[in-house]
Image 1 (cartoon, rainbow, N blue to C red):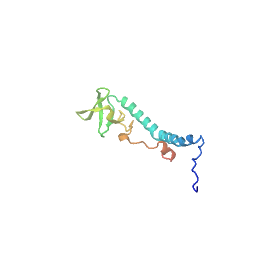
Image 2: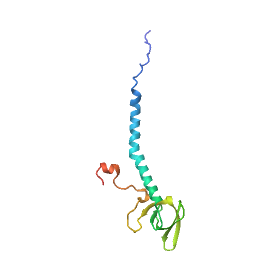
Image 3: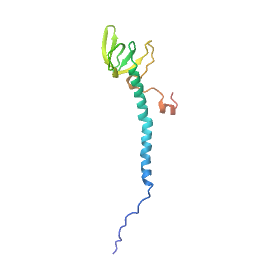
Image 4: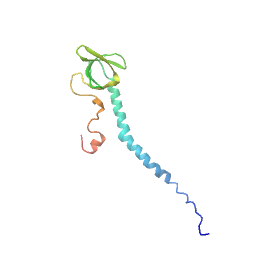
Amino acid sequence: MFISPAYAQGAGDGGAGFATILPLVLIFAVFYFLLIRPQQKKAKVHREMLGSISRGDRVITGGGIMGKVTKVVNDQELAVEIAEGIKVRVQRSMVAGVISKEGGSSIMAPPGGQQQAGGLLGGLFGRK
């Protein structure tokens, strides 16, 4: 008598589904362009660098050991001379960087996975 019956809320409009998915799509796009895509580019450059290692190249291993490639054993292994008469076999995937044959300091890939200065955010904020 004193209590009125409760009525269900009316059905919402059809556009609400798109409005709830749009932020998720935008978040994925931001993650793709700021995280996923640059990491894929960096991995591609590293794979190309590993594929181009040849005899006579100076390399830096993942453990920080520098040496000269004396022999490419197979697709996965290199023979590296780290001191006169001391040769070690190193997995190709553990090479962090290649120094030019002339002995200069141009490293094809930064050692230890360090990111080079600049990049997308560095360009936005004025770092070069």
